Image (tube, rainbow, N blue to C red; front, side, top):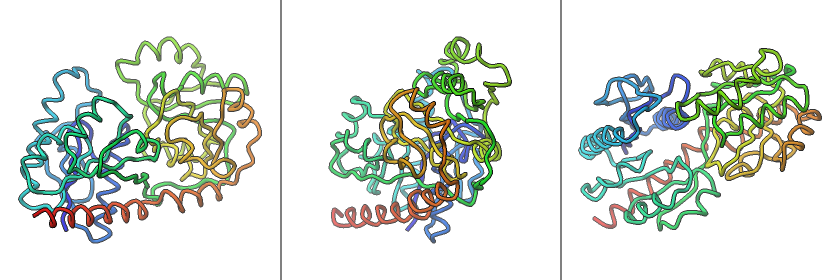
Length: 343
């Protein structure tokens, strides 16, 4: 069985820093190959994932500055990838809805992982392609979708890339897009209420520059609140691993939240506000706490007694790469059997 993983062309696989979906694709690809499944990744030419790679666009393009035109680039990339993959692959696994339109023209089974939040317009599109097998990344996300071929597979990560730290330093961490829905300003509020230093890392996209200037930058003093810029894997290990807790004060229904798993892989508990998948990812009193308010976040931050080794063990049991890969292989076989019956 050979699998085509089709990534959008804008960010390298794996990403240099920002790009949760591209990190997922890279780890899935290498995990599948390690399990004996042949894989080809369609991405951009800067990708370094250690499997067969094919591309038509050489350079990454992030952040995207002219949104209204870039869907054409992705459509060109994805349609080419599907046309190429149909000659040599048994399954085409999409990571964006752009390729769904081409699925009606090919005999190959198509799987599409839904990486973004629920959108009624996208759901209307999904239902027009009922033969596609859709993968939700949380049960919460799955509960919002009506497609006939639908399942949930939680993300898993390569735990060998994350080193747990038993001894923590006296600071809180925040990693994510600097955006209102991610709650960067709430993380700053927690730091001010507790007096515990906060280290922030994340991408400042053009549409959120005003938010950063108004709600984040005025509080950056290099002591209580510090902004570190983007964080690659080594920086994540250091920032999360030494942190006493990672704050995840989201203001939306998070589809999954891979950074929560990354933090816990470093033995660092997550203090989160509830929304979307959070209660599926964070186990109260084991790997962190799901809180109802800023006051409760601050209270938990000042009374942490969770074992880093127990936090790490929780991730090993529930969010390992091997577990995720096994679920996808099972789905690929199911989709292949269904296609054979149709043929």
